Image 1 (tube, rainbow, N blue to C red):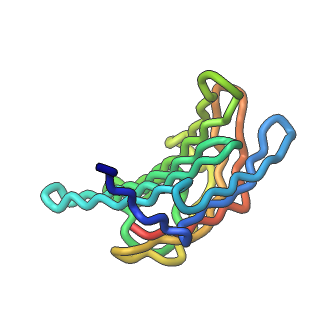
Image 2: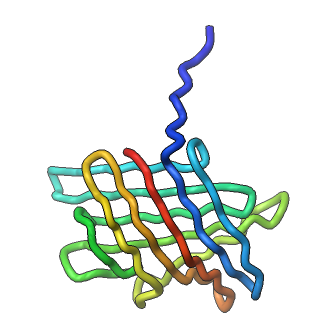
Length: 148
């Protein structure tokens, strides 16, 4: 017997310009190339929203901790209990292990503007710089829209 396949939500999308080493590529993912999830832990009054996208260019992960409303937030720590935004970008290097770049949580490395945030969907824009030692990846013109 066949297994259950979820229906692809083609309205989910993530797009961004990725600049590394002076070269700019475009990440464009939609439908099954994206993932949007929201976890609320009421016992400890905590929440996590995760946005991820993958294509042949690389993979991008955004995590929002205790961010519960539309607004503009810094990547890194934000005012308020446990409010933090993290970004990780995995650059494809062909076969083998990709290179991971992360934003530094101790400094402001970009902003995310959440224009819509409900219990069913999230959308907005962002730009962030992620680092791996002395190398960096600059993510600009990023747009995300997804349903939980």
